Amino acid sequence: GESVGLHLPTLSVQEGDNSIINCAYSNSASDYFIWYKQESGKGPQFIIDIRSNMDKRQGQRVTVLLNKTVKHLSLQIAATQPGDSAVYFCAENNAGNMLTFGGGTRLMVKP
Amino acid sequence: KAGVTQTPRYLIKTRGQQVTLSCSPISGHRSVSWYQQTPGQGLQFLFEYFSETQRNKGNFPGRFSGRQFSNSRSEMNVSTLELGDSALYLCASSFTGTRLDETQYFGPGTRLLVL
Image 1: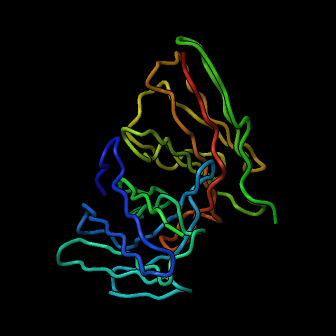
Image 2: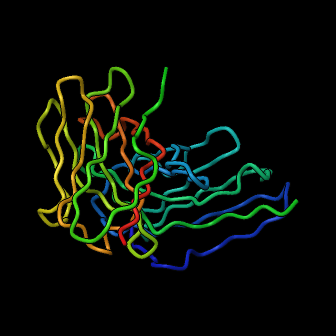
């Protein structure tokens, strides 16, 4: 993933709406992708992962979609709640524990 | 089970000093990775240790070093601190780090400010 620098893109949604967070990755050979959530003052927390041989994976209220053709990942959060407010990162794991992170997207949930 | 712990949580140093940060992985985890997080560069991989050996290294200068002890606890050291080293330093652990789908669990980080 490419770092987007100082200014994180921000997604603002109404509580109860669905959220879609996007991520472009750089390595077409990447085999494994992860979404992390980082709340203020905390380290990244694992949300969901997907292997490159899949194009969709669902968890509890979250779905990850993978489009290898355009090297794009998305994270969908259903019925967004105030507790979902955080910065979301996509990451690629290509070798051992060397994660390559995207720049992150800040999700703000309006009550 | 206790999570990944990092000490200290906050640190203020001056340019030219050195600093040592500590990470205790989740019990049973033997792989420890370190990341630097800054507003400008985002999250970047520093290095990974397994069985007291550095197994992978990111693109950072030699001023950044680390080690791992027999109980899997890890330390990282930054010598001759520069203003640009101000960052949140994150530690992550996993069982072996040999499988791509092995979840890495992150600690809360150490916030380093270099003046």
